[in-house]
Length: 249
Ligand SMILES: NC(=O)c1ccc[n+]([C@@H]2O[C@H](COP(=O)([O-])OP(=O)(O)OC[C@H]3O[C@@H](n4cnc5c(N)ncnc54)[C@H](O)[C@@H]3O)[C@@H](O)[C@H]2O)c1
Image 1 (cartoon, rainbow, N blue to C red):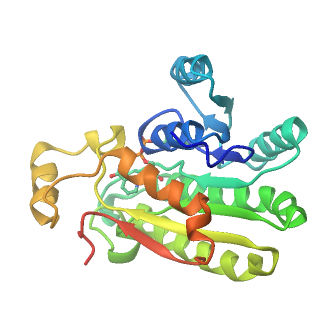
Image 2 (image 1 turned 90 degrees about the horizontal axis):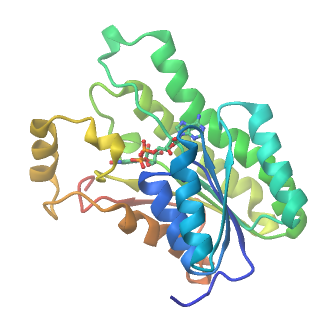
């Protein structure tokens, strides 16, 4: 693949599986130096790192919990200490704790908001100084179409993803004078471990509602991340791009 991201340093949160793993693979294959985070399953992270390193790509996994300020600070400090710059931040880490509101515990709410929304706030805040001094940067938040449309049984998740859109737009305005572009990708239904939890009935229900009649592959989200990292998107900021096979139309 063309090495159009050679020289760029990218951080991808939750990079050891699913959409995050596809993003890590895509950015690294195009020459970026990728720092990816994992929170559990260190063997899986190590296997991906070893495989891509053997292939001549630059990928390093660092354990970090995005919902913890100290952990995020240590991650960003380590990257800056090692390479002195950060060109791209992809906020991909996310969790679900689905249940109807009547049954939703405070912990269900807090866990999801802490990871999906506070996590992005913490990483954005931590990379900001470096990107501002470079007068250049790209931040890509992985939202969801349910942050736009809502979804029963996912009030916590939808609120976190809606919040991510507000964060994206506010930061796009705050950081525009420093040439830092901030955008949000809103996937629809993507085949990953996260959606494996759905029942066959729920999966079939989703698929019939999708105009393209199928779920997305993680690679189809990663290619849009690559677009937002590339010079092709140099005049786009503060946008939410649905990558959903037409589901949210
Ligand atoms: N799969 C879908 O259909 C779909 C649809 C819309 C949006 N999304 C979003 O895409 C992103 C990736 O989803 P996925 O389907 O690949 O899910 P996944 O569960 O396979 O991966 C999520 C990743 O986030 C990491 N993570 C969780 N909590 C973390 C924390 N506190 N700190 C650091 N990392 C943490 C996990 O370890 C994992 O690597 C999420 O933000 C999700 O909300 C997914």
